Structure formats: C-alpha cells, structure tokens
Image (cartoon, rainbow over all chains, first blue to last red; front, side):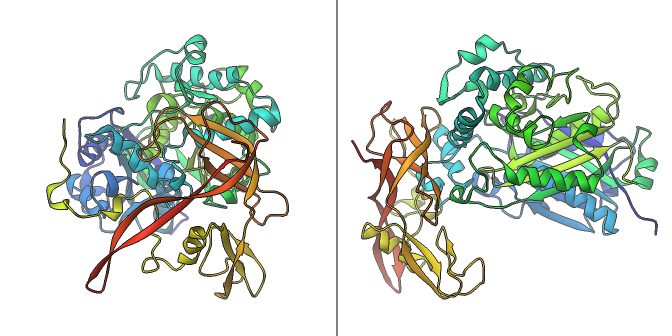
Length: 395
Length: 166
C-alpha cells in the first residue's frame, strides 16, 4: 500500500446560538449540512466516527455518546466509534485522530463531529455546570467556572509586561465580530464599532462584554479520508491535513508553565512541533483560526505562533495584521467571539472555514490561500491543539 | 414562585452536583490535606525518596513514582500579582458579585511559587496589586455519607486568601 495522505473533503456547521434543540438534534443538523457539502458520499460509506463533546454527560445526562450519535445519523461504523473529551479542543483532537486512523489504514472514511448543548432550563445551571470545566476540586472550588476571570488575569499580566492596552484588546473583538457579521451560522451577526466595544458592560476587569466569547449551543461535522478516496468523492481542490500537535504541560493553574500569565510556552512548543510536522514556518501561513475565547488569547497566540515578536501582539492586531490584507488574516468566519463556542464543535467549525478558504470559496476569502492553521486551547489554557492544512501534501 | 426540587431526590444529597470536593477519607487518598486544612494548615505532599514537592497533593510522586510521601506546610502569606473582580457570570455558591480572583506570589522559596485563589473578606474596589494576603480556612456544607449501614454527616472546610490589612 502506498503511504496514505489524509484530506478533509467536506464540512457542515449547524446554526450556533441559544438553540431550542437537544444535543442529539444538533448533531443531526450538522451531519445533514456536512453531507450536503459532498453529494457523492452516503452515510453507509462512513466507517469511522469520532464524536467530540464534553458537557453531554453533565447537561444532557448522556455518557457513551458515540453510539447514540452513530444511530441517529444512520451510521454503522465498523472501524471506529468513539467519543472524545478535550473540552474546547474536542473537534481538532478528532481531526488529528481521524488523520491517524485513515493514514494507518484502520479506517477509510471518518466523520468527525462535535456538539454542545449548554443552555439549561434555568440559567444558574449553565454557570454552575462550568465548575466541571477546570479542575473541579482545586481551581473551580474557588468559584472559577466560566473562564473570563482567569483570562482577565492573563490580560492584566500581558498589559503589565508588554504595555498592551484595552484598545488593542478591542481591536480583536471588532475585527472578529465584523468577520462574523456575514456568517449566517454565527451566534451573532453584528457589526461592532470600537466605541461599542470600549463602552460595553463590564464582565471581569479588564474584560467587557465583547472581549469574551458567548455561551453557545451548536454542532459541526467534517469528513476525513485519504487522497485517492477524496478524488473519487469530490471534484473540489484537495485539502490535506499536513500535520499538527497537542501539548499539555500542566493542569492546575498553580503549575502554570510560563514566566508569567502572558507567557505561553506550551503554545510555543505546540507551534514548533506542528510547524515541524507540517514542514512549514510561520511565514507560510496564509490564514488561521486561532482560539479567540477572549480577545487577549488571540493577541498572545499571534506572538507564540511567531506571526509577530513576543510582546508585540497588541500593536500587531491593532494595525490590521489580522484582517483581510494583513499579514495573516485570523478568524475570518468570526471566530469564537462572534460564532460562539460550543466546545466540541469549535475545532470542526474552524475546519469548515479553513476548508473553504483553501478551496477558494470562503465568504471572507483570503486570495490564493494555500496553507491554513487551526488552533484550540482547552479549559484554563491547560492544553494546546494545532492542525495545519494545505493545498499540497507534505513532501 | 416556590420551585420544588426533584421529588425523588427529596432528602437526598446528589454529590455529583456538589461544588466542593468530597473530602471524606472514604472517597480519596489525600484526605490528610483536608484534615490539615481543618487545623488551619496549608499543606501538600513531598516525596521521601527524591524530595520532589508536588501540588496539588498526590498519591505517587510524579517524578520518581515512589508512593512514600509526607505532608509539608506551604507559605500562608503571599502577594497579589494581578487580580480581577468578576461582576457577571458568578456561579451559584460564590454570589453576590464581585467574586475576586487573584494570582498570588507565594515567594521564590516556596515549592509552589504562584497560586490562583479566591480573595474573601475583602470589599469591592479595595484590593491592589502588591497587597499582602493570607491563607484562610472556612467551613463549607457537610454532606451525608453512608458508612456501613449508618449515614453520617461528613464535615468539610475549604480555603481562600484574605487581605492581611482588612
């Protein structure tokens, strides 16, 4: 057998938002849109299934989610059928695992899907359930549920060490909201002005409303197979999964691996490993979807990915380098800030955008994009997951 | 409007919904940490073989995998590096806002150099970067636990930091 090369060939995203739907309904919506993206592929052709969801056990009282999803989607996986829980990185974990499954020959055609249903009948339970998203007995027992306060501390440290400003944080929100304003699946289709961003209601200083991604229900699905099969199923340009990485150096915040909270060595390491695996360098990246759970996250990510120097992320984003025409346009579908963040779905929503970018059919198209990068951090920045896509395979 | 709980859970304690750890010795092997907390001590485990200090406390040393560990005391005072006062999305059990979260420097000599902690006993708008804070232990609700045929109440405490100059 020739060495197999994994490709992503189709993707679909459900409407994101406060959804009047069960998590199992959301999986079905995403799968319909995903297979709608590739008419030659039928459910019976899919032999592997990876299901990313973290809160299903808590919020939908459903563990062992993979067989449930397989049955509802009309799939009969014969190679692999597993659920993944890496919280915010569930989708991209699935894409890396799908690559491994098809390249090893264990599976032929894999669906990677992810979803969360986070809104509960009473509002308190939404926030309360998030006390399981960090280390429950340690960080979360201090009241750290939804992470705005934690990343607010990262922002304060970055401001202290590098002089980053609130206006620079807001530049990320404005850019990403304006990208998302033309995305019909996004939680918000709202144009945002700098003035609105700066005058929004406080959440946890220095964060105001638009520095934080919303709480969102939603699902996404994608299809991964190998090059030859991809050519059989699709006439579109091939998009290869060139490589990626996943790095975890700590979990409880007391074991933070950086010199300070504005320093993310685990992301630097993950980026280095992903670049090496995919045989690219920062200058090769044409478009990226990095994890903008908060405005500060995207600023620090620009630095750790090597798009700008360490400490210069603030001026870099404020000078339009993340916009169309900038050095690397980032989160061209609106990112987490505008689309929202149903954890297991997010990496696959990123894949859907980057697939379109590399096939030249994105709404906010980066002309001639050939190499794309997706990134998630998980939980309280305890893990980094990166996927690099390309129009050409690694040679 | 009075809202009833789940009827069949009346007089039951669903520990899966608890916001505090299950600290009783029947449910973990680091209960010494919680016993020490009850005495007002902030401790963690040190390996007797290789000397490595791990936080949170462990059952094995993450460096050499020895299971011969001892509890040592951690500093009880630190300085606020940065902090934030959370005014939206404060979870049930930590209300009313603001909920103050601080990144605390325990000093270069401490095996645990920095720690994220809630700051309590501190009015809104008072805390400043560089302020000295101290370890504080408080009671949290007890929960029932079945031991043999008996149901007993397991008493619990948890910790936070508070300003030294209140």
